[in-house]
Length: 87
Image (cartoon, rainbow, N blue to C red):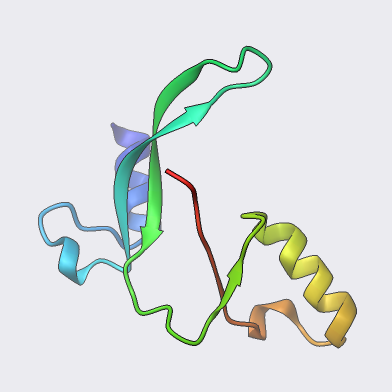
């Protein structure tokens, strides 16, 4: 749990006060490759309002940032977007 506590601090997650957290940590199944077996993992989900933000359908934030940088010529950090995951 030491690593998990470090990640919680990085993501501004407070287990005892989730409403004050920027992200919340939830368990979610993940499919492992190449075995295709499922295992439980922890996922951080943004705890704020995403109204008016662009949805990243692919779930690949890095690819989204690279594409935005190429299209706009602006820093991708200035773009607002959010990821969505299928549960």
